[in-house]
Length: 255
Ligand SMILES: Nc1ncnc2c1ncn2[C@@H]1O[C@H](COP(=O)(O)OP(=O)(O)O)[C@@H](O)[C@H]1O
Ligand SMILES: [Mg+2]
Image (cartoon, rainbow, N blue to C red; front, side):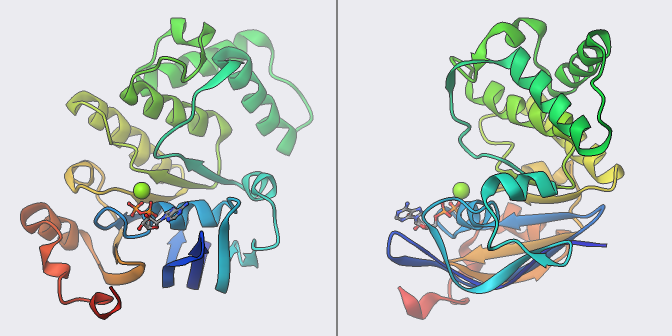
């Protein structure tokens, strides 16, 4: 089933048109890789799908499970089952990880059944997720992302994703700042999301993560437009040539 459908999206940020007619689809159980050089509009697309303030949709549409989300708040979009793991996760002083994760689990359960998990079960679920992302129990008593290393922040984003169990995951460069083992752990998690039938829009600048996470489809953004779309062979080409082959491609006349 189709989860996300972005249709000819034009988006303005701070008075500048950043996305100039972007279309893409993500289906259940599909990993759609979104690649492109710095500044091509990948994060802008992610923020716009979640309805971030200041990201003005001038035309086009964003459909989730067949319905437009443009009139919905970020909170409402999240409750439909859309999750965004941020490229630069914020530090939130005062918010300890443990009660935050408990709130995530209880929020998720409220969506379906009106019962709370008994504390030992919550602990077990959190423990399993901690292990999957490679964080440890002492992290639970710390404030969210406060003093976390770049890689730990990325892992804490995925921890939230695992516990919230959204239908669609948008992961904005989940591999940046991770060491080789970190990349493998992140790849395992993304592959398990796919196996569970979730849709994944995987934003990545480099092809190295895609060696461990074979994408079903690859879209390359360049200067706010879709430059190329195809299969994993595109990621391989970017890995060997970089983005230079995009010169002379779409959008060149506009800068
Ligand atoms: N708040 C903003 N104000 C002005 N320009 C912005 C803002 N946010 C993004 N941009 C511009 O939009 C373009 C796309 O940025 P971004 O979506 O972050 O690219 P990517 O994630 O592909 O690296 C860049 O040229 C960036 O400078
Ligand atoms: Mg970005």
